[in-house]
Amino acid sequence: ENVLTQSPGTLSMSPGERATLSCRASQSVNSNYVAWYQQKPGQAPRLLISGASSRATGIPDRFSGSGSGTDFTLTISRLEPEDFAVYYCQQYGSSLTFGGGTKVEIK
Amino acid sequence: EVQLLESGGNLVRPGESLRLSCEASGFTFDNYAMSWVRQAPGKGLAWVSGVSGRGGGTFYTDSVKGRFTISRDNSKNTLYLQMNSLRVDDTAVYYCAKDNRYNYPYFFDSWGRGTLVTVSS
Image 1: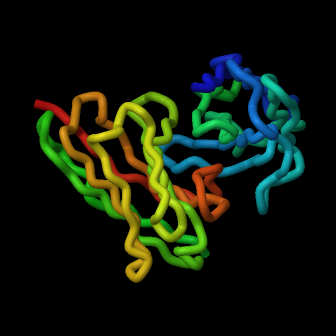
Image 2: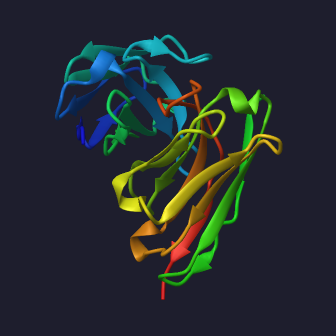
């Protein structure tokens, strides 16, 4: 199983700041098949990024994904109030696994 | 607009069975693989099972193999999850998720609101 480790567990940020979230895989992810989701309390997850760097339909360009092999990053260039949430990475290169999540909270 | 509506969640005792359903609308159902993803209370997401567009391919995470069965009825645009021999650690919100592709679970571009399964004595 390809285990995904997300760091940090919690990120305390202020609106307008840049947030960088990390996702590290225990094995290289085939074809960089990594997706990122946002989940707010009481809501279903929402797809942000697929294929490590392709934004989903309707996702603002302040969200960007990068990385390859075992190290992947989600960057939010300028945090908006609605961006405070939990973010999960997922790999689909070998079966499917999710990371444990990073909570982005208001400082 | 894609809509996924789960139902069937309930409180059951260990060892009992439950069947979840997910009614889909707003897209051509049999063109896409579908999955169930669960989230235990206060925990992260975990993929449970997936099925290809026509239902010929089914896929499971190891912890549910032999206990859960995924299926779909494309004439009814409905996805199912039959859960047998339920355990306390199966307690979670179960989400129905639409895949981006046809033949194998990849990533999920639409999600339902979830249905809660509680397994407790």
